[in-house]
Amino acid sequence: MKLSVKAKVTLWFTALMGAVSGLALALLLLVSQSVVDSTAMETLSQTVRDSLSQVGEEQGSLSLSGEFSFYRDGVYLLVYSKEEALLAGQLPGFFTGVEEPFQNGLTRGVDTPQGHCYVLDFFVPFGWEDGVWVRGIIPAGGAAQTSRNVMTLGAVALPLLLVLAAAGGYAVARRAFRPLDQMAATASAIQEGSDLSARIPVGKGDNEFTRLAGTFNQMLTRLEGSFQAEEQFASDASHELRTPVSVILGACEYGEKYDETPEERRETLEMIHRQAKKMAKLIGQLLTMTRMEQGTQPLERERVALDGLVRDVTGEPAFAGEHIALELEPVTAEGDSQLLGRVLGNLLENALRYGHREGEAAEVTVKTWGERGDALLSVADKGPGIPEGEREKIWQRFYQVDPSRTGEEGAGLGLSMARQIARLHGGDLTLESGPWGSRFTLKLPRK
Image (cartoon, rainbow, N blue to C red; front, side):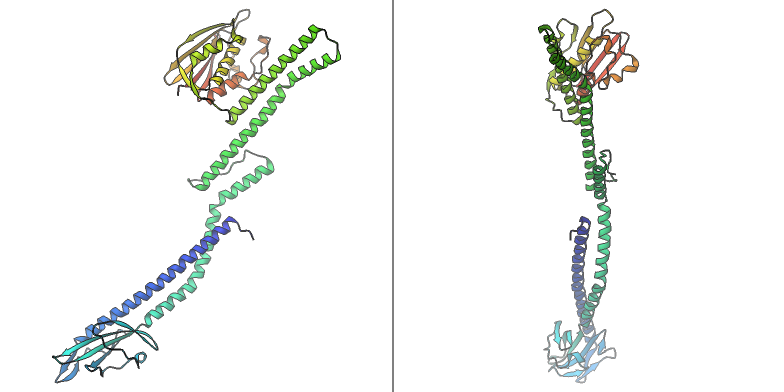
């Protein structure tokens, strides 16, 4: 039969309590016997010593004072001659027939047919040559009775104690393991309903179970985020890839159905190539964003000179011939140069695409500078600006303010991914916009 953890803990606790109680009972028995024996010997010694002053001699005969008692405080007193003949007193029944030599001032235990007893002798001298022996005898029956009482108490109390220990142990174990039951119930609910939003209630205090519940909730949060990111990726990919895939399929079907001239065939291939590049770029961006959301995007941290990064990116062929003014102060930050270059590239593409007025060429200014513990990089244009109602929406995936203004349609992922990269570095990406144009500012910690 398989036992639950609560039952096993209860059994171990009950067994431990039984062992401790048995040990305590044995210790109590030993201590009680020792106390009873010590008390008996102390009583024997005190009684015999008190009686010595009451024993004397008158005219050559034994004389006992009126205070002398042959039985006092459970002690039998007897007086013997120097030759060990009984002169006064009566042997107790349990000591009859026992031959115990006299030993002056020594308390010792004597075993008799009826039980154990203690004996103490003192010699009382009368002059130089005469005297008497005073013997005290006390039975050790009190120790035996005490042992029986302790054993009776143990026989009654020990089973009751074990029952209480088992009931109390099970109650404590049940209460202590309640978070585990809640974890099991939550896991079962998640399995049945596929609801990763469920969480385990975390109790007060800081113990093993609250920490385990907290860790379990963190794991659920991460799993929920991973599934949401996976669903988001699948949804985004299926939505955004539908158009380029349709274009590619349409071009292929047209090429298969009709005889094209070399010029038409070249145009078809160029169209397919453009759409394939667009798909590859989109998939790369989606994968990067998904990894950042899941916390699996690795950062190759190094010291990055932002002014040098700007010169490298603006010197690429994609930005050749554009009106890009540089106002650079030497400043460094710690981060991934490849990801930061992607942020700058996205900002420049947006500024050149949207940051111009009708009939004018775009004019973009890139600045770098340091401020306290931060390194800053800004990309500003002189376009018409972004309407106030659109300024928060530009950070959303696939959102574009007005793609018809440029005649080009991007994926709408650049700014969303750029802000994620900034926050992945412990910084942020902000926007200022008005009739004078727009300025995006990237703020990064220097360390």
